[in-house]
Length: 192
Image (tube, rainbow, N blue to C red):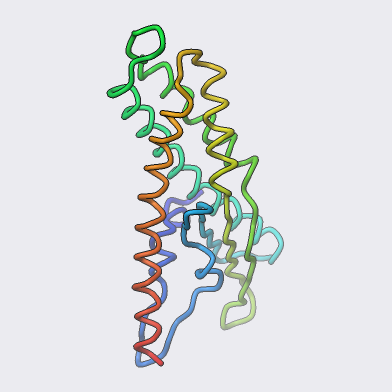
């Protein structure tokens, strides 16, 4: 996968004003995190066929969510390890939990990700497709499954405290995404 295709931030910033015209990216409205779900946007360019292009865009959207979610798990593990004593009175060994974060994060996102928008456009010559997919992952389900999965490998994990750390991270992410979406709406309203 090309790094540029994984940069959802660039895709989200694709709405711009050029010579007084509005440029719109399909599926962008569904690509912002909320307090109910994490969202990702995948864009596959220069695709010969629509179907494989949509599949590629779907993979890019899932990769975007997965990388952010793994980062949140690792941050949650780090915060948890610094601040919580286990039931046995020992500090949690951060590397014991963090080592599993990538595998668990990937597994959870793959399991719960659902495409909510698919679109494709032909280029000006009518030869190549640019495909767009927005994916949502329901936070409540994925967070519960992640905490349960981490609990399987770490018996001293206080699931509720770890869930609280993770929920705080997810809330921060959703708030930032909603602020970005609001800026996008303001840009759109200026063009009208």
